[in-house]
Image (cartoon, rainbow, N blue to C red):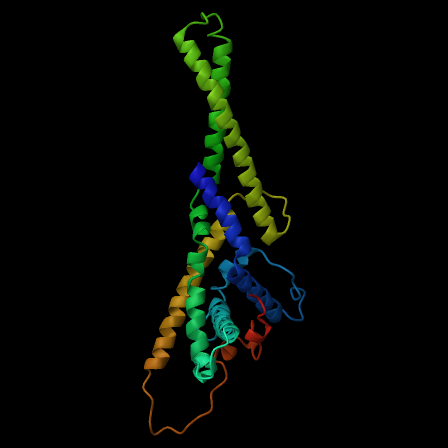
Length: 286
């Protein structure tokens, strides 16, 4: 019980304090508003986290690239640019000499942004490890276990007040049972209060993301995030594999030099063509 409540408590803190997770939610919200621009669905201020699990259902013209891939690649690029910027600021604060590599142009390349960003986004699942652990818990089973202990304590106290009431006070069993009840009452009261506190904390965390729904959804929030993290891990793996294919693709020496083409994802999703879900220029979060 103690270990379970610890997982839940830490999971709540992880979710609310994860800058990268909140950044992903912001990107999804921006994407949804841009795709629904001009409709009654546009201009939304929030969305239910269940929506995250539907990002893989919307596919592009190639039937492979999904909205999740789009969001993940945008965040990868944004996080990579942020990492480079923070690294430069850190080196600048250390007052390094003129021969330092702080101005290395390769750091500002798109490839470097993507590589750094991919490593950062790939670590989100590890960052929210306790969320995944909390998702595996059975909230109803925990509540029932605590409630059962409470009922058993009441029954034991009733037994002492009825069947054992006529027993002599110096009876060894009676003394042991009374001592046990006194100690158990303290422990069980603590567990009941702790269960109530944890339930309230989970409800508060759910309301933080969903608004005050008025419903107690138990640990469903953690289950949603756990499944979404699995989707993120899969998308990062696919992005990494696609990048390897691009690097390993043979080049035709006879082909003329061509200018970089427009981001292919903009052709896959016309509704968000020429618009970025997220950009490093607006990334002020530390």
